[in-house]
Amino acid sequence: MCGIAAYLGWQQAAAILADALRRLEYRGYDSAGVATLNNGELHCCRAVGTISALQKKLIGKPLPGTMGIGHTRWATHGSVTELNTHPHFSMDGKFAIVHNGVVENFASIREFLSLQGYNFYSETDTEALVNLIAYHYAKEPENATKDRFLESVRKSLLHVRGAYGIAVICCERPMEMIGARNSSQLILGIGKDELFLSSDVASFTTHTRDVVFLNDNELVHIKNDSFAITTLNMEEVAAVRQQVDWDTVAVELNGYPHFMLKEIFEQPHALENAIRGRIENDTATAHLGGLQMTAHELRGINRIIFCACGTAWCACLVAEYFIEKIARIPVEVEYASEFRYRNAPLDQKTLLIVISQSGETVDTLAAMREAQRRGIRVLAITNCVGSAIAREANGGIYQHSGPEIGVASTKAFTSQLCIAALLALQLGRLRDLSEADGMEIIGALKQLPAQVKSILDQSSHIQAIAERYQSCTDMIFLGRQSMFPIALEGALKLKEISYIHAEGYPAAEMKHGPIALIAPQCPVLCLACNEENIFEKTLSNIQEVRARGARTIIIAREGSPIGVTDDVIWIPPAHDVTIPILATIPVQLFAYHMGILRGCSVDKPRHLAKSVTVE
Ligand code: F6R
Image 1 (cartoon, helix red, strand yellow):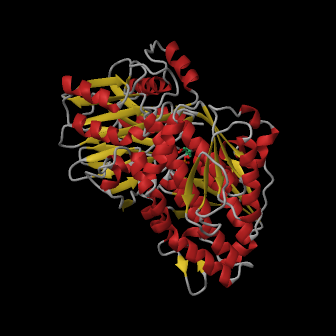
Image 2 (cartoon, rainbow, N blue to C red):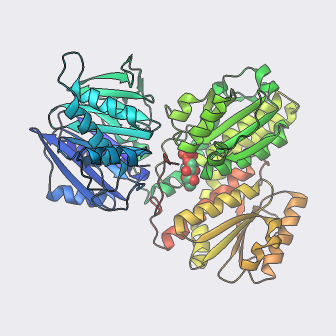
């Protein structure tokens, strides 16, 4: 949540930062701002609304200087006003800061500073931090051995409880900048005679792919075109330089009207990437190299707990069906935000698996750390290379979905399901799954990209269906077994993209309460993609809601005898392990078209942000 960017080099900083913020906008879009430093003077421009509002203002008020900091905000402390928009300045006007995260003890810092005569103009936690830096700077003597700027930032951060990724500049320090992180991603980009700081590499990959991922409790001090990394305890850190290989085209719309639609259509390719190199035909199994566990260790696991938030949590529910059915290992699924504070009994044969597209979700990270603190091995399924979750997990599997910019997760979700299927296959083959059953799963996975493509070809049919339902006020999604998590995910997608109230239920649960909601303005979308008797039971549930006046949309395998319905979307017949992935595509397209028809901002839905880095 919130995105920060900083630049120090030879180009005009404001333009570079405005472009970087545009690429970071998925992280928050309440308001945005930029500050530059030129000839010892700080200049600032801030605007409420999206980055385009800031860009318009910058045209009328160009900011001079070849170094600066920028921020796109998702409000936590303080309402969405220009006063609360970053960058924030110290009362003495010497420091400007951008901050992603939450200073949990900001009230006590503010109280302390108030007693020292500091005034505050915003309601933010960040303004307390920048003034604390100014306070330490004022007290810190010029010293031959210690850098006063670095010392004042370091000492301030030692007092901070909470999460932060920050970039700070000081009007007395031309061509210098300090960045620091704790539980909030911060990456240094190294260009030719220019350096970048950002919450996401995607913001500067047009300039450089040479990066250093900072670790928690590290500070980077940039001076001209060089940098030094130290810990909060002043230990020197050797920078680990890496090349990121994300395609910059992936962060452009590339002819699509929205990132969400582009990413929905990228799914055949994303699924190919998730599968590539991970199948062993000879032994009818999958090989997920990043697990860092021997076959013996994997056989020793007798319980798996999956933990995640939001859409990734829905992916965990599908993983539960796959792993219990294919590998016969008991699985539990937890919301990370609940698990982290619950004293769940765990033992050494329990494996925790976290799923996170961003690899930054604070609750998922905390759940993982809690399990590790208790000696439990944690694996991560994530899309973001170098993210905190990827680096701290004991092993894991990268999704290789490419950057996901649309706030609503689409291609990352189906890739997570695909990886869950591969994991179930690998675990199953280490236990009782027969070679023939393993080969069947492999065959199904190989067909997946082409089958997904055939559903994408129905986009205009799904749009026509959406036109008939666009004015509904509520919607219910039903499914049984592995279709139940897809019903939850379909409802979540519709809620966030079209602002229609939607709920997902196991189809038979309808009768236990929600059926009371059925009315002409509350249609039912039913995922009737299961086989045989479960399919028949789902059909009965559909007839129950139709008998009470519900309009129905059915998603079913081609050729299934679905009976009477208002609308139908067919998906190709497929194996149980790929059916949930295929059934997801129509609900994504339905949510997208509903959002567009209702004039919603599908890539940046209100109140949401892509990486949730606050609790
Ligand atoms: C919904 C959505 C969110 C995320 C959730 C977890 O479309 O995208 O519900 O799934 O915030 O995010 P990650 O996967 O980054 O941990």
